[in-house]
Length: 251
Length: 251
DNA sequence: TTTATTATTTTTGTATACAATAATTTTCTA
DNA sequence: TAGAAAATTATTGTATACAAAAATAATAAA
Image 1 (cartoon, rainbow over the protein chains, first blue to last red):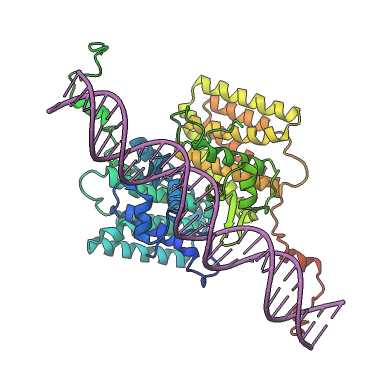
Image 2 (image 1 turned 180 degrees about the vertical axis):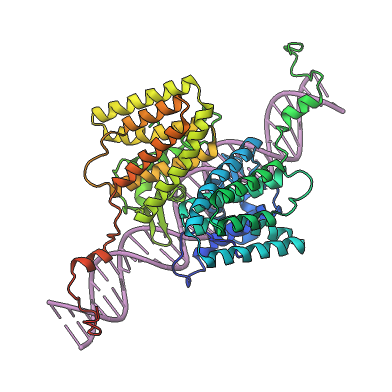
């Protein structure tokens, strides 16, 4: 419901939020559904079905799907339709690497620009996060733990970088859904808290090191081996499979 | 025509490039027109008109405009239509700052991953760039000087970062169109050449310093004072204007 | 029974029609 | 004549219709 900064396109005119925000509303709903795992990676997103669900025509659904596609949350295959993205292991590493880079820059700026109110706000956000973890509200936790990073970006004060990070955070959620092995992350709240402490203390180097470790820990909890069905099948059934008759014993 | 990596969405199936690439073709045409200054910032992009020009319905024009809008090259105002973006001075600074950050990361990766062929390729690109400058082909130069940075990103091997940089490079072109003061940049080719030299010599720190200087030089050549009509008008007519009669001599 | 081919159905891509909003022109009044 | 109000025109937002492609089902042949 209260996701951070819906689109940054129309901060003005809060009164006419009926027609215009129809797009945004459906976008929010679908993004939430994907990030909260109600729509699994690979799920087909039929235009007709979605149109019926939200009570609109395919036209507006199409707009939303295109937007999600540009943010790499959805993948559109020409003449085939839209599907929830299934980020590859390589893409997962890229996204985490991009985050390390961008969030390092964000921390540098945040250390300089921070105000006491900002720190208070961040600590408050972490408290909320911890609460959601204690009450077992997994959906809220996914959102809140991402919001922490976005709040930090806002303090840094570069909207262009914020927009990039927003996309990366969404994609990270999708990556975690797909590759998280076993248990949930123990408690990233503590790591977030440590980062804030370092920022408040103006200790830039430590804050950056903590953030890098935090993101690296996230990546380390993923199972990013290349077991994408095909290669996997061949390795499992290591004896030669019939491929049409030719070149049987070549490999 | 030969822009680098149109969309990265469909690298497969080069044969059916007729229906599918209609979108892409119009997108390319419009992007080129904007970056080559044939469409000035602020220009209204009427759906009907564009549809007639490209011989398609508004439907497909709309898709293209939405894509350009997501890349911040075009600004869509609800119920008003699409316009070529007029990036604010603040946005200009943000874009350049984001580039310094991202390209630093790209250089780090490129220094590690470079092959001799990559360096040869880059040098070749710089030669092309220099040629376009000598022959006075300004349109080609705008494209080629951006392509240099994108090639570097490709060498770094992170497609996610490449996509971000691609957007930033386009936006930089738009920013230069709007804020470049006086003469063209003397010759960024030389700066590009120096950067390559440092990368080839594995001198990471020097390559980064050069890139930062290069981007800073770009920013310094811009006239980024907040002279956005309104404030400017008031400062130009510094004598009190009739505001209704009240509080005349207060300031 | 299995496979290949054909026919049917479903779904996407595009054009068009209509409704809602904004921009423009015209008309009316002071 | 200047300014305001109303009517007209143009443009965007959305729904729908039709064409093209893909997916599915059904039929026929081995």
